[in-house]
Image 1 (cartoon, rainbow, N blue to C red):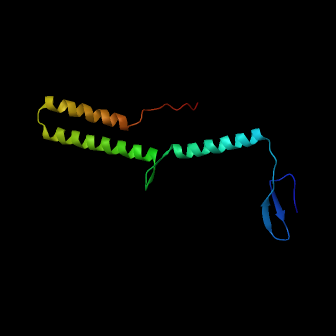
Image 2 (tube, rainbow, N blue to C red):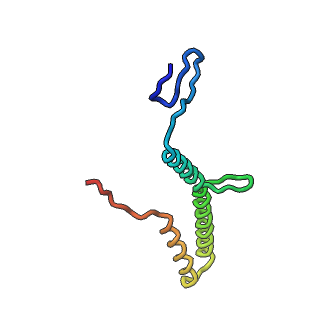
Length: 113
C-alpha cells in the first residue's frame, strides 16, 4: 500500500519500508541544509577534539576551576596554620573568603506570590 501524503511507503507483500521521493523547491532544500549545518555546529560547539580524545568543553572547564580553587584554598589554609602573626594571615584569610564567596551561590528570592 502506497500513500502519497506520507514520506514513507510500505510494501505489504515484502514487508519493507521504503522512503518515497518528495519533490521540494530549492529554497526548502537550502533551508534544510542550513538547519543540518546549524545542528552540527551546535553539536561540536561544546566538544574539544584531540588526536585521540574527545572531551566536553564545559566539563573540562568546570573541573579545572574546581582543581585550581581547591588547591588555592588548601594553600591558604596551610599558610593560615603555619603563620602565627595576624598581619601575615590577612592576605590568606582574604583569599580564602574570596574563594568561598565564589563557590557559594548568591541568595535568590522566590518570585512565587
